[in-house]
Image (cartoon, rainbow, N blue to C red; front, side, top):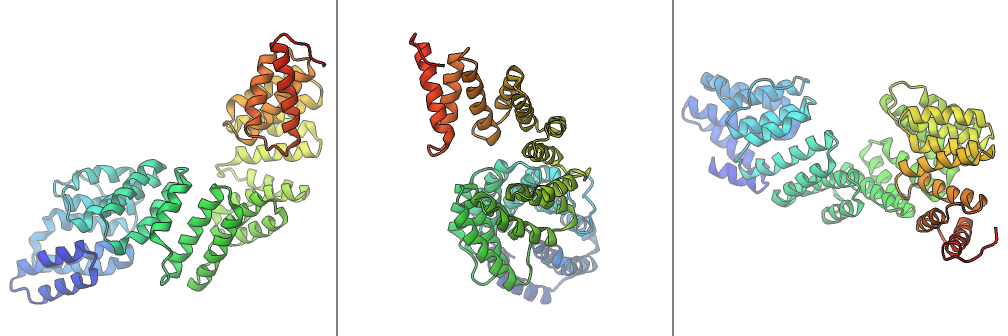
Amino acid sequence: MERVEALLSQGKYGEAFEALTRRLDAAPTPDERGRLALLLAELYALYGPEDAENLEAALAEALEADPDLAAHPRARALSALLRAYRGEAPAGPVPDEPRAAYHLAQAALWAGRPERVPGFLEAARPLPPHLAWRAEALRGHAEADLGRFAEALAAYRRALAQAPAADRGPLALDAAEAALEAGQPEAAEAFLRAAGPDPQDPAQRASWHYLWSRAELALENPTRALEALALAEQAETEAGDPSYGVPLLKGQALMQSGAYAEAVAAFREARRRAPPEEQSYVTHELGVAALEAGDLAEAERLLKEAFGDPDYPHRGAAAADLAELYYRLADLEATRTWAEEAIGLGQAAAGELFLGHVAYDRMRLDEALAHYRRAAELAPEGSREWLVAEQTITEILAQQGYPEPEEVLRRAQAALRYTPPSDDWASALELYAERARALLSGGRTLN
């Protein structure tokens, strides 16, 4: 048993299985045979549902050799894991036996109850080395499923620090994904760089290049993202498992590059491959690409299709995009209607921005200012909505004769931090700021 545990801690799983099965075949007594078969079942539990049949057979062998094992916490936890593969969550109190608690944490995750995993893992101490790092990986999966990506990332870091070298590649992919979701693309690239793409496994290679492309896109390097996506697509073809995620990300990279027509083609391919639950999301992306490509009729059809799905969680964003579409069509009433719809669905910054545009075009400057100020307050600093609101507030106040020169200066300076020098807005904002400074210093300025 000690030899088996030592081999497992070194990541030598094949040797551990061989050593254990030899001991099992030579077991002199039923109780020892039952104990060894139970350990064999635990080993099969490391590999998920694909080894459920072997897990079930080993557990049955253990119970046949020693029926008293039916009351053993580990045997009961492994039975719960088998049921979890069929969707049944574990019930009952948390056991005092650490390895049983670990297997119940597995069961909770497989049954779709990630919120129960931390409680089981708190009782899963101490664990042998081959389970200790897996417990941290389980915690990472659970935290990611719960949307707590910073906590997931911390758990994956602990798992990577403990895992044998042979197991760090897949873990690094999980850690990189958590880092991306936590908004840390540089950390994601560090994980990926340390692991390197697996030259022998095309599926893992595809994941590696896909995650690398996500990181590059988050760092606003769309050309590098597209290069990585080409390698991901090649690996997926080799694996015989093309995903919808690769053309979806390709479309996003092309959008960032300004290649809108090519983005439309990529999103169409993504929609062709996407599962039913992702269709509305891809349709929304395709609608935005069509909008930017200038195909407003197609954009209207697609955006309304996405908005029309009552289960789509981004209906507010689709409404905001429809407000933009109708603003481009100079239909101010439709713009107002969809902007108000966006506000009602949680996209207040975008909705207020387009209500500001409607008021501004109708020369209702005070009303426009109120909407733009709310948009600037609600939008994240540096975002598109925030920048347009700050720029336009500055322009309107300048048109009104600088009634609040301090506000003009403050907003112009803030907007300039995010406005490229080549943008026409940059020179206008500099002029507005200069005039506001002159007024604040008591000097005269031309209106």
